[in-house]
Amino acid sequence: MHYLIISDVHANLTALEAVLADAPEFDEIWCLGDLVGYGPNPNECIERIQDFSHVSMAGNHDWAALGKLDLSSFNTDARDASIWTQAELSPAAREYLNELPIQIEKDGFNMAHASPREPIWEYILDANQAYANFEHFSASICLVGHTHIPIVFELDEQRRRCETKIPPFANLLEFDQTRMIINPGSVGQPRDGDPRASYAMLDLDAMTWEFHRVAYPVEITQERMRARGLPRRLVERLEMGR
Ligand code: ZN
Image (cartoon, rainbow, N blue to C red; front, side, top):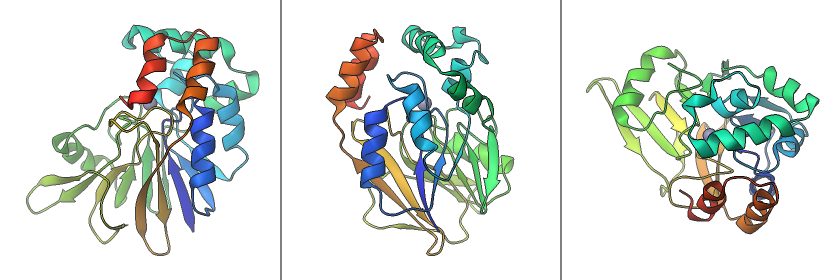
């Protein structure tokens, strides 16, 4: 089985279409949350992912769009975009988001939007935080999104620490017995300085993981955001990948 692993699409349909066109053949999509929020096409992204066999996690922006979160925890731009998204969502899209789980285990992989310890909120930004999360899931590998930064944290049980790997690597990541927390990066709003959409391919037969990047027409998404009156800073950050 081949899985397309995506996260943080953030209503960026143009980026999602670029990933779907670029990805090698896959059997199923695993989406790690935040399908909506920030971007101009929330309903279309939700409809598009349903064209495929898939599993999807709830993210903080998905909950915000449903009114399940207190928006005072968001910065002004995120809050304004979230209020716009709340008004824009179709009844079918709301129902879809409302049924998303916050954490699952599938084929030996744990999945959560943010972290196994706090599936909606925690940002796993460094090796110490990653290390503290390993006792909160039993599977060998946990897949997360939320930070919009592609990264691998490998547990070194003997030395009681984590090793950090940042793509690109020269080789495929091969799974052995090492426990890992892996983030595929963000499709719709990358924050690692590279504006290209980020995703990963998981091959369950070969037990390998490969990070991918694909350029998409950022200006189309930006034009749609301007037309909808979404915050200027959110429009501008897309071309910087920050
Ligand atoms: Zn996000």
